[in-house]
View 1 (cartoon, rainbow, N blue to C red):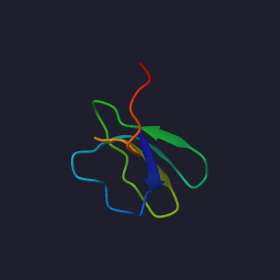
View 2: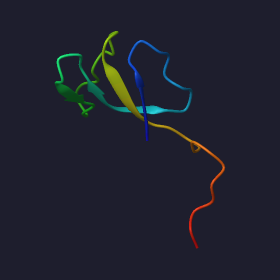
View 3: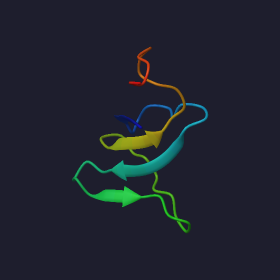
Length: 58
């Protein structure tokens, strides 16, 4: 998962999970609607890849 400012472009291959609006309201993506990201909010994405090169613990 990745969080980023809503005004930034969404990474290719990412899926929007929900939007945290500037006023703190949480808008989830549902089968019937996708919230429109606006500057001042934060998007939470399901993104491919990781943040670093760490390997999972064995």
